[in-house]
Amino acid sequence: MSPINAGLSRLSLSTETAGELQPADDPGLKKRKKRDKSHKSGKSVSVCSGSSKRKSTDPTGHGRAVENIKLQSRPIASSRVKFPLLTEKPRYTTKLIDIGANLLGYGTPVFPDIDSVVRQAAESGVGDIVIIGATIPVSKQAQTLLSSQPDSGPEELTGAATARCSLHFMAGCHPHKASDFARDGGRPALRDVIMAANQGQCIAVGECGLDYKYLSSPEDVQKAVFREHLELAVELQKPLFLHERGAHNDFIDLLSPYIPRLPTAESACIHCFTGNWEQLQTYLDLGCSIGITGWIAGSHKSAVVAALRTAGWERLRDRLMIESDAPSLLPKYIMPTKPESQYEKNVPANLPYVCCALAWILKVDPEEVAKATTENARRIFLNVIPENGL
Image (cartoon, rainbow, N blue to C red; front, top):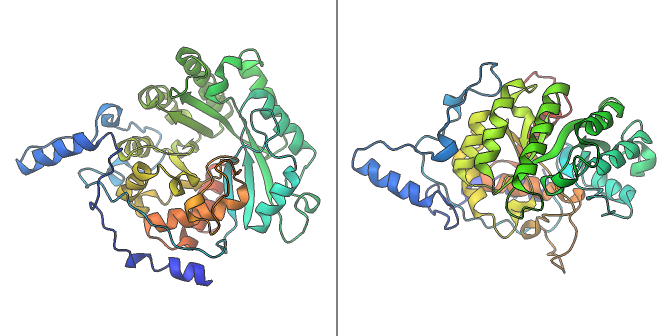
């Protein structure tokens, strides 16, 4: 075991304890204070509010039973985290899978030399990268790129037979670009991209969902385009790579009816989860899987750290996956060398830091996190069942 991983394996020595601090930016804080006061008086108050109160209806048996995942009245966990002082990039026995990287951006090249980006990822221990389809034209570009690489990871691309990195892609339209969806061909065009892909290359429908924070596209347009993606995922029995920001209630209302019609409930992946613990509870109740990015090692991480710790590793281990979301969300606070500029691009080669940060937050051996997140990604997105059948 490397000195880095040996140090991380002693996470149980952390002095942080559950319930030590309630994050000030958690919108559920006032509700929890009211709930705690009611507990002292002997009254029973529901933990969740709004959409989080909905009960999971899972007639197909997708996902884990709700009673096994409920947070119930557990106190909110600490949101404080001080990451270890790493001197080098962590290495893991398990090859990591980056379930979401914007290697092609929104159509304007983000990385002039994609081959170099992929090679660096392979050398850093990343075994697979999934290129995000941010728009229909970008999805087509990804399909064209991968069609010239039938093995999705030839030595010519990665530079060495010992450092292979397989490429996959997803096809979709980010809610920011929902206004362009119909003009670019809509659902028929997306279906054509997916059907034209070689076996195992187009692994999901997305990125898709709702984003009310910036409203780059009107709400009604976003909702209509989101429904098109949901219908396509059900039609083709593909996983979903889902985006939600500032639109939780509408997002849940639209997504919920489709969950039983997907290959499995966990094939609905909440990309780059940044919400609070009540929102996390809602997703877990639905059976969704959760994508974790470098956000957890960034500046505004308190709510998501508290949410993950409140749920705990045992509840999350078969739901979590990791992603770079390159070129965004650099995990800067766990990297040995801090970026010189706030505009420094993130790359899939930084995924080991995301794994390390997640392990540190949940107080779990990082090798276990690497193994679990990789197995989850292989099962959910690559349709590969572990040899032990778990």
